[in-house]
Amino acid sequence: MNSLAWVGIIIWGLVVTGIGLVSAAPLEATQDVAAHDVIFLVSGGLLTCLIGIVGLLGFMGWVPGLQPERRSRA
Image (cartoon, rainbow, N blue to C red; front, side):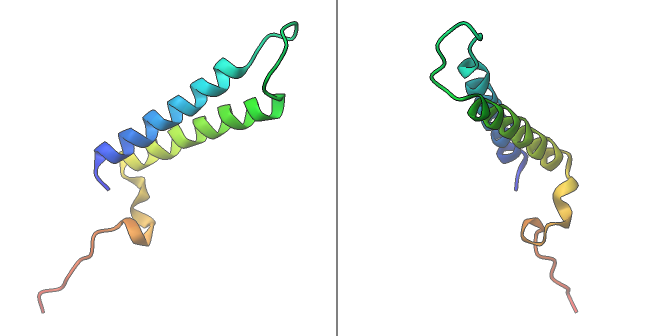
């Protein structure tokens, strides 16, 4: 995967985290979203950002499907 794809994953994680943070309402206000949904959105978004950062740094080379094929010239 190229670096643009990893940047897209990071941006998607920020969007999901932002949705979770915007959905969090003060205790006095009426809540349309349950508390566990907000936690899932925020933690899932942050985990997605972490995956994108790890991939962007190049540490995802151990995943067999993400490595380019190396052909021997023998």
